[in-house]
Length: 313
Image 1 (cartoon, one colour):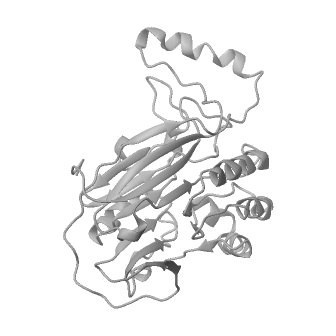
Image 2 (cartoon, rainbow, N blue to C red):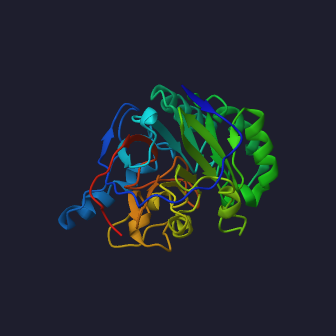
């Protein structure tokens, strides 16, 4: 039996570092995959020539790409082997990301029948008028063990407290430098969440208060820069967004969105020492109303108990 509780335990000695290296595949259950730029130099101009006809098409993207990634965690409770997390981020409900797109993403996420849904921030852009509609839409997410959320820089820019109240009114557990334990028999998986790094509101030590060092810990952190501190605290897995995967990727030019961590932490799975991270491309758009060679994403993460090759450091 798996039970979600509100209280923690005592601190115990740390386990040795975990090792894992997942495999990722892309599936098309959500619908048609967006067009991707051809990477061969001789075909670059042909691909860019499609931009002229794009003006006659809707500015919103087709269905998000659903990616499936297996992530092995050595300390994962045996009862949670096969635990499925659906990760949504950077919704950015605005004139660039209409409510219909948000509702479609929610519908597709529910079809994956997750054990848990992780939301990692930036639900709105610019205006508080978008807060209640996006909260209602996200409130329709369904998961066996609940929906957990943290806030992003845009949420703080608009109104962090109002965003928190709206999400919580729809039974979404907003973690603001806090944690929730998921009991699995005698073992525990901790879901941690911190506020946004750009606003200097994050407090990982507070989120870790009373969390035993031996237990498995998954951190929701909007900005992937949080992996540096997460690695120092032996977090097993970090889920982030913020980068949009680049959003606009044009060969020969820098991506519209970049990371101070470099290309390595812009999109998909990676690791820093014993801490693994998954950075989702997200759902919405900012600055410009398009994605190019960078489709929106619903990430489905399948957790397995075990150890694999060490991957990168």
